[in-house]
Length: 232
Image (tube, rainbow, N blue to C red):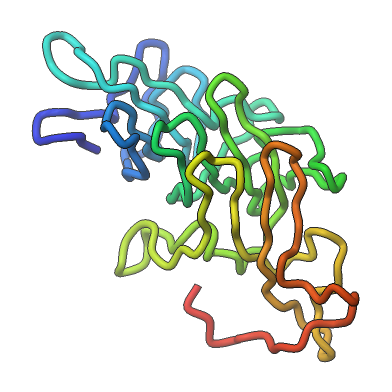
């Protein structure tokens, strides 16, 4: 992972084991290029997960006379379950220009508190989170395995990291829009054939409220069908 031709960011920090395969993937940077986020399966900081992928925040600065990570922190390192891997998905779908807030998905339980709907993160399954500088990680919703439009395709696809993403945040990071097959707000999301249908959701970080903006306001079952030839 590089910010320019001479800047390496994925450097193992003092106290870290360096365990795991080095496989960094750039995610997003601040508008001024001073902060970079990337994922890696190598343990780069002491509090990083023992396995799986973590999400790192690199503050660009002078390191031994060269540009590098003057400060490297693991955004996903503090899991709610000790020893559990963060297992962050490769792509950060949205972040603010000043890099103080971002949204991401991970299979680890990074926040043990329930969301406003009373749901909790599920270990080993896709969970949606919001990170804010100085406040840490907050759980938003437990997603479906088919909700890859939130986090993009994996690195195993020919297109590489982070393709086919339809989620986005407002410029100030307060609102995050995404789609999911999960019934996240208790409203009916299954059609007459009892198949889950994808709905559009809006998260308000200020109130922590999650609303379904495409659900039928009458409470009736949605009209639609499950697409089996998906490109997720």
